[in-house]
Amino acid sequence: MTSPLKLAGLSKSYAGVRVVDGLDLELEPGRCHGLLGPNGAGKTTTLRLALGLISADTGTVDLLGYPMPAEAALARRKVGVVPQIDSLDPDFTVRENLLTYGRYFGMKGREIEARIPYLLEFSGLAGKADAPINNLSGGMKRRLTLARALVNDPDLIFLDEPTTGLDPQARHLIWQGLRRLIGQGKTLLLTTHFMDEAERLCDVISVLDQGRVIVRGSPRELIKQHIEPHVVEIYGDAMAEWKTCASTFCRRCEEAGETLFCYTDTPERVVEELENQPGLRYLHRPANLEDVFLKLTGRDLRD
Image 1: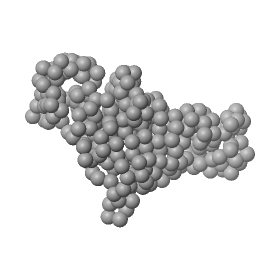
Image 2: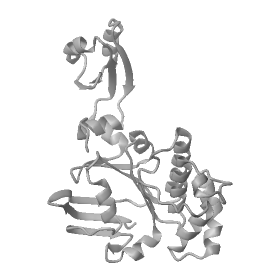
Image 3: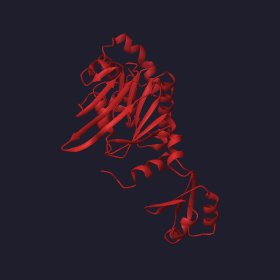
């Protein structure tokens, strides 16, 4: 099957700063692809290039078989977009927002109306069709933004941090819906700062840093290839003294704030030693995607 999105040799600079640097990315249809990276890594610029909202300095973009940005209007007919910031019309009701957005795609009123019950059920907003936007909570507005992105029954859906601001119940509702979309053969491109979200949803993850893909693979592959299988997080006043001998029990240690992260193949030895340290508290857990992300991109804040 043809890839719904191909980026080849893509570069983009602003004021002499290379934001996207020779990026190659190709999505497989019917899968959820994660695009992860710290702030400033180039994720949002990559999405804007892919959608034809800006032009690349070098390289090519093929979106659903159309060259971008030359034929952006044609390509976007079967694309859905969930932006980082909600842009709902506060003067309209929930139904009117969906009707207005559907008309941007040339859809007829009856066609949009037929989809509204499904969209409201998908987003957990059944019974809210006639509610004014200003009467919705922040989480409801976020869920409506996701529903709006599906009004044209898109083949490819861009999700830019879709669950930001949602409570755990709403996040799980959206995750269920996104898995249903994948099951229907839709292709998803997801950016998120929630590593558990990426680990749950994504079939393939590309980690972006300084405008380049530095690793690519499934969550399980990335964890297996780049991190030790077990992590022991250590806290407490005696941590500074204990960390001098941590290398005896751990393959690798990293200190972040008041926490010492010990990465190991033999957590039993570490836990046994810690049981004899009353001034320390610890948490033993399997390694996860967040550990991989921090190892590859560092623990320092990015502005």
